[in-house]
Amino acid sequence: MVLDKVNKWFGALHVLRDVDLQVALGERVVVCGPSGSGKSTMIRCINRLETHQEGKILVDGIELSDDLRSLDAIRREVGMVFQSFNLFPHLTILENCTLAPIWVRKMPKKDAEELAMEYLTRVRIPEQAKKYPGQLSGGQQQRVAIARALCMKPKIMLFDEPTSALDPEMIKEVLDTMVMLAGTGMTMIVVTHEMGFARQVADRVVFMDRGEVVEVGTPEQVFNDPKTDRLKMFLSQIL
Ligand code: ADP
Ligand code: MG
Image (tube, rainbow, N blue to C red; front, side):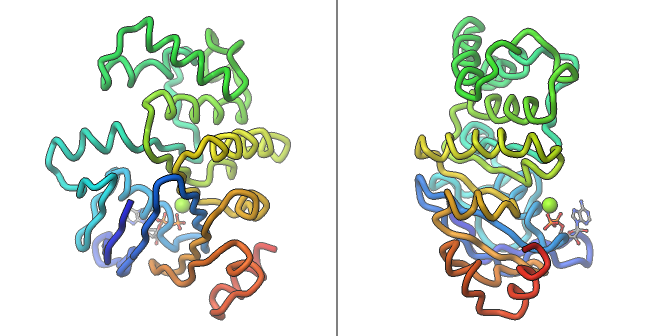
């Protein structure tokens, strides 16, 4: 996954400024930075939920464009988990997980259900399969969202503050699920301020501020030895 001098504006607002980032297969990158610094916008551009105006984004060697082949490839290869779960409330947990494999991957229903049960087991909630999202806790819903994304067999998983809408007692179960996923060798880009998670699984931490990548390094480098005043200020506020 490569971002090469990516620029994006919302009207006159310049939200991504010459963003360069390369993420190798199997690598785990944590992105942090103040609110409004462009973290979500960057993640959403990688998944083509937003479009960038300048620069290049390549996912698995395919350059993102409006080309249908490119869009289709991205939908298959990039899984995304949002802050607010975004499960379909009128579908059961199992149906949430089988929808895209059946309609996008054209998988037979029975195979899709088997696959979904496999991933629901992996996130440790197979017994919830017949329930609706509203009957589950926030932590359980977020684990379903992770299982649902995995059912598409993505090559890369994007997480945008996956625990920030959760009550404290549910944060750990979701972070544990993400640590488990990291253990499988999944390529992951995770926007989070959970330092413990970053230290445990991140190969690199990216600090963004005002649309720019300001510092990149190992968790030790970024958290223990910040170079810029901007990062020092940010760390003093979240620690
Ligand atoms: P972060 O995720 O780091 O908090 P965002 O990527 O959400 O930051 O936002 C970056 C900037 O872009 C902010 O100033 C935000 O207000 C603005 N922004 C985000 N989405 C939109 C949008 N759809 N339309 C206009 N401005 C937006
Ligand atoms: Mg955000």
